[in-house]
Image 1 (cartoon, rainbow, N blue to C red):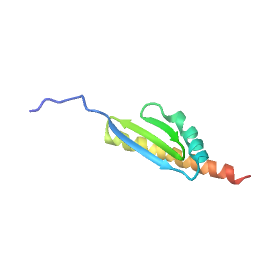
Image 2 (image 1 turned 135 degrees about the vertical axis):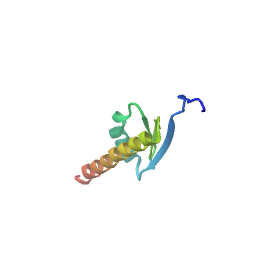
Image 3 (image 1 turned 90 degrees about the vertical axis):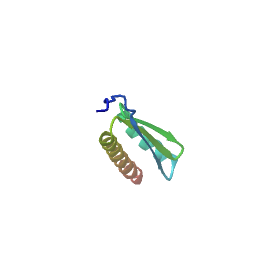
Length: 86
């Protein structure tokens, strides 16, 4: 039997989202950045929002990605409602 190795590298996912305006990317990035602890690092570059996600397993990566995208979706909707008021 092969010896078991507990030294697996984390799984990484880089996700880029591009918005129509850099103000939207910044607002959404500012909204989701507080939740970055642990598995996610969110950065904004111009009109693009980048998430670098690392997780110890594929299921954890998928759950983290799902959570991050849900937060982004809510932030986009809130930003849109806020800016449609005036």
